[in-house]
Image 1 (cartoon, rainbow, N blue to C red):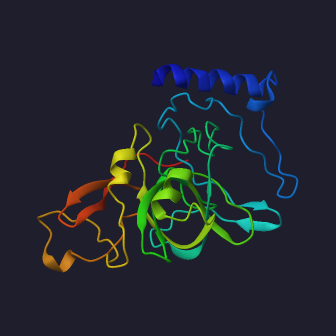
Image 2: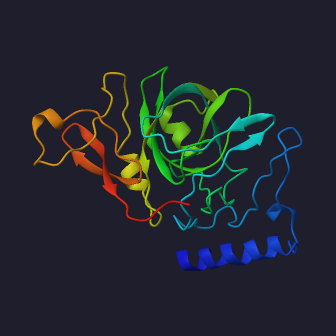
Length: 242
């Protein structure tokens, strides 16, 4: 079924490139204020959404609405700002790295973080936090720091408000293939009593090494379930991102 959906993605992409789209629901739309367009919808509402299948991208500096954004992999990235969420208007559309947006998965859009990558988002009003998969660019509205999926906003408990002040912390690169939904669901923390998560270490490392150091640039983050909840660890990835 996933193979069929991916085939549909390829066919739909070719149709768009050939300017042969026959229905407005599959057409992209240009935002007149920001000069950017939404990608074509390649999976209809209600159909299964394929997982992964994109490419690693960091990207070059770009300008939207007069503001310059500089994508980079900063393993020490930590910022606070406003988060918003997006849902069925973008469901089934291609993301900036070639995946397909699924509003029921724990994903997010960020202007500069690598794609795909993991970032922990904490709702500063209630202490709830979870790790999301960053696989798209945006948001570009006002002072927004990150856009999270419909499902992520529900778990962070700000969907009803529309926006929330959050903290975003880079975790590491995400694998390209397969679904990480179950692992990301397990990263949910439900209160401010939780301390900032530590990075997993090998049993062979000494106690002096058990610090909150982030993974090296170019590592893929994985999740290990340890006492007190899942934590992130870094696994070196030999290939170089685009």
